[in-house]
Image (cartoon, rainbow, N blue to C red; front, side):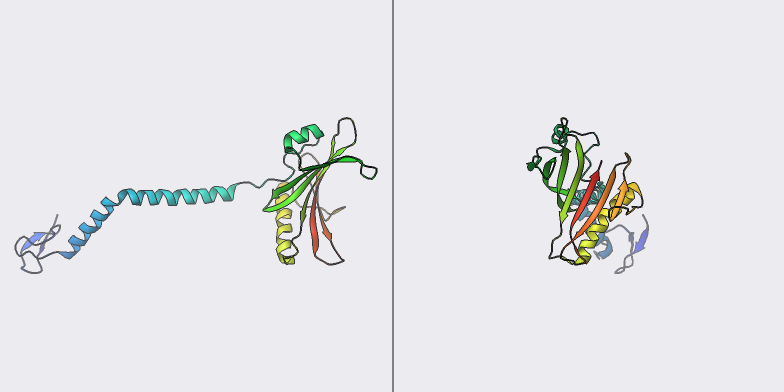
Length: 208
C-alpha cells in the first residue's frame, strides 16, 4: 500500500481508499475498480460457463474437421459372398436376380454418402454357388442445375481422396485408376451425355 495526496485537500491517504477520510473526496479510479471487481465476483459463474462453452465449441469444430472421410467401399472385402455382403452392408434397398443379359445378382444401396455426395452403391455377385462378389460400383448423378466448375470440384475431391491414400492415379482403362493395399483396382469413370463436355454422372468402380 502506498500513500498519495488527496487532490482536494492535500492530505496523505492510502492509494486504495475509495474516498478521502478528511474531506470525503471520491477517488474515482478506485470506485470504478471496485465496481468492476464486484461485477466479476457476482458474474463469476456466468463468465466461467461462457468460457467453457467457447472451449467446447472450438474443440468440437476441430474434431469435426479431423473426422476421416470413408470410402463407399470400406465395408467390402475381396472374398465377400452375397450373404456376407448383406451382413456387412445391411439389407439392400433393391435387388436384381441374374437374367439372360446380366449374369449377376445386383444389390443396390441408395443414398450412400461419400465426400458430401449421395450416390447409389451396387454390389455385383457372380451367379455361382457361393455368389462371390465380382465388383462394386458407386454411382453419383450430376445435378444438371450445377455448373461444370461445381461438378469439377466434386470430381477433384474424389481424385484427391484416393490419391492421398494410394498415390498418383494411372489412366490405362478408365479416366483415373488406383490400386489399394490389397492390389484391388479402384477406378473413376466420367460419363458424358449428348456429346457435351460435361459428364452426367460419376462411376466409381471397385474391381476385384
